[in-house]
Length: 113
Image (spheres, one colour):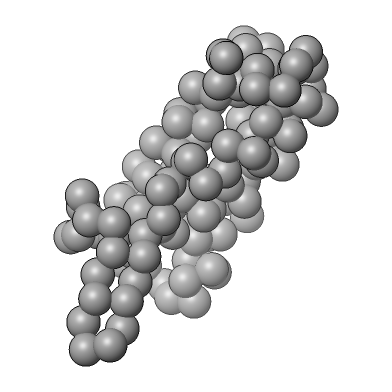
């Protein structure tokens, strides 16, 4: 199952072509953001690690739900509040755990400090 299909399944909807294209861009951006942290543990020709797809999915769903509300951290309306989270910051411990399993020498290595 590719990334767009995973997101459609998680959302429980069939996305139109425009939304599928937007989701594909969000997936690429999420993978690039994650690779910024873990890239030194990947070989040049190594594909994005499928073990981290759950992080990609979470970031994409957050971005998808935030569409038209960019820059906002939450929305409150008639007693309903939606918090968008902090994005990749929420998953740094997960990325560190992945890095620890793939050659990180010391805790905090993915952050560089």
